[in-house]
Length: 156
Image 1 (tube, helix red, strand yellow):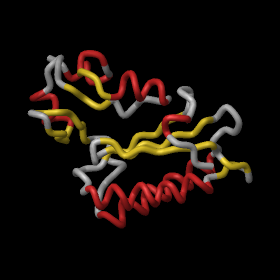
Image 2 (image 1 turned 30 degrees about the vertical axis):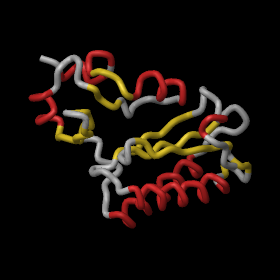
Image 3 (image 1 turned 135 degrees about the vertical axis):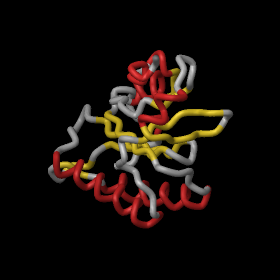
């Protein structure tokens, strides 16, 4: 069952999918429509999952599930991966490449390979911590500086 992002619990589980390129506004609208349809019927063991989504910075797809009433199961997670893979195919994008690091550079979001990122990262570089696990974590720690996230290991 779809729930507006503002109404889903802060403890909700989060998955962040990073696109390898910026999405157009038209692509974002299509993705939002697809995710709305998916969330309205997302189930685990025949029970509707209280879920939501966001597309941030025309680059990141966020899925959320409030597991206070029903946990996301293996099969339900598989179904979410399936819809994300469908989006990949429809737009010719890569949403599963974890070897690309997204960060802000001169007001733009840029992605680089890990070796290239290591060459340019500084402690105050704004990065996106896609390892966040809850809505609260997303809101507090997702868009942050490298020195305050796991990216700190790349600082020289």
